[in-house]
Image (cartoon, rainbow, N blue to C red; front, side):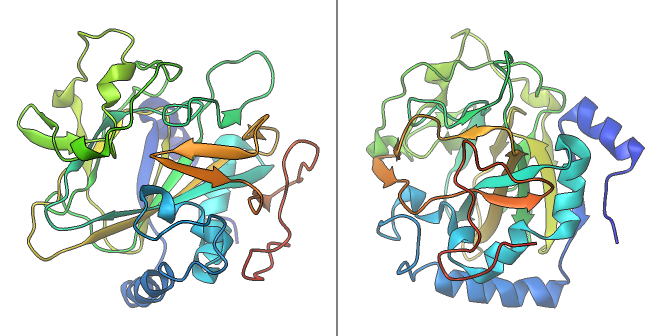
Length: 302
């Protein structure tokens, strides 16, 4: 079976910068996966990065060592829909786990083109002369996601213009991670102030156009990383929100060019064990290390 976007959905994606939510897992299935994944998040013996589980980046690239997530990033329901946007030759170059615990702040408005905002150097480089690329993010809800627990918010149509300059410096100040309150909403960016990257210091996102993305456990939404997006705070007392983001680009895109390590959020990540996953079409080994299997032995061969 194929699961490609319809022409109408492709047009919606072009216009708004996002599409969905779509159903992926039955409720009982995703809640069982959630229990399994959450337990294995604390086991880092095969993880790509040698970090404490409390680190901000400890949730990076766990599709490389947790089988349920390895299988997830290759799911044809996801892959075919992203094929509709990016073409047949596709790689998953990063994944991130996004927990939001009771009382946690929201995430401030931001965009990502080269993903150099925290590391100081481009993490992805599209071929040719274009200096505007980004990635497709597939954000899957592992728990129910309401406004109260801190759902994603998008500003439709903002994906074709960068309002931030990712080459600017942002100072990492983890003590201030919970100190930013903007327009009455408790928001930060994991120890950074994203406003420091604004091209126009006086500019503000038009929050009157913001759309909250409420999702059921087992659903996913697709959006360009260059789309203005944020999340609300978790104002509940006893509900944890958990989302898993997988990021895709065409196989021709150069990943972590000219570096063997990445520094983000106060941690340095060695790329010794890292590799991209070819999820569809032709693989390109000329500039990226393509993994045949995960660090846990899960086969990525198709």
